[in-house]
Image (cartoon, rainbow, N blue to C red; front, side, top):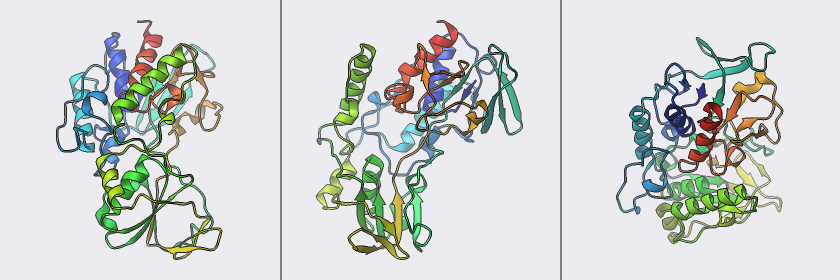
Length: 354
C-alpha cells in the first residue's frame, strides 16, 4: 500500500511495479486528491521550477522539455501535466479520492498485516509506504497579536496570484524561495515589506537547479561513504529565478528583521517601530503530514519518525512501515522531483528483494 499519489508515491509505485508487483491488486496506491498532480496542482499560479525539465524528472521517464524565455524552466501546470501522464504511462491505477485517516495494527503479530482506513474503505497490507508529503501541514508561527490583527493573514499554501492584493500594503514573512518568489510577484501590484529571521542568502545568478541537483547527488555519495557534506544548504537559500531577478532590479529585495508582534493595523518591532499593512503572507514552511500514522503510537523526534534500515526509510519501531519524500530525514533530497528516485528505488528493493 502506497499512501499518496504525488511525486514520492508515484516514484515508489514505479519501482514496485518494475519489481513485479501488479498495480491494483498486489500494489495499491491511494491518493486524497480527486485529480493527479499531487501538491503541484495546489501551488500558486506563477510558480516555476528552478531548472530545465531534464533535471526535474521522476525515474523511468524524462519530463518533456519546456522552452521559453525563462531558460526552459517549466511552470506549475507543466509539472502537473507531466505527473498526470506519468501515472497513466505506467498504469499505476491510483485510487482516488481516498484520504487515509488511520494506519493501525490488526493484532499483536509483528508479521501480520496493517489496516489502512479511509472514508468508506478499509484494506489490509503487508507493508505500507507513507508518501503524503508536507503540503497539507503548513506551519504557522505564533506571534502576539495575531488574533487582534484586522487585516488578512494567509499561508503561502493559500496564495494563488498577486492580483488579489492590488493596491494593498503587504508584509511577506520568510527567507526561502517561496517568500522570494511570492514577494517578487506581489510587489508588482502592491506595496510590499519583506521580513526574515536572518538576512536572506541569495545564490549566484548562474546557479540553478542543475547545480543544485549535482550538489545534492554529491552529498548523497558523500553520506554513503561516511563523509560529511553541506549539500545544497551550503550554497544559499534563494535561487535567482527570472521573477526574483526582476524584483532585485526594481529594488524590492531588501529584507527587514522579524517583527515581535502584530497590532490591529499591522506589525511592530521591539524598538517601537510600527508598520501598517492590509495583509500578511506567512511563507514559513511546512511540517510532515503524518496524522494518519498516529494510531501506531510511534515516537517522534522534532516531528520526525525515526527511520533506518537498508533503505533509510523504514520505521525503527514499525518495520512494516516506510516513509518516502518528506525531506532529508527520509533520504537526501527526497522531497524533490529529481531526488526522490533513490529513496523510492531503495524501498522497492527492500520490500521485494529485487
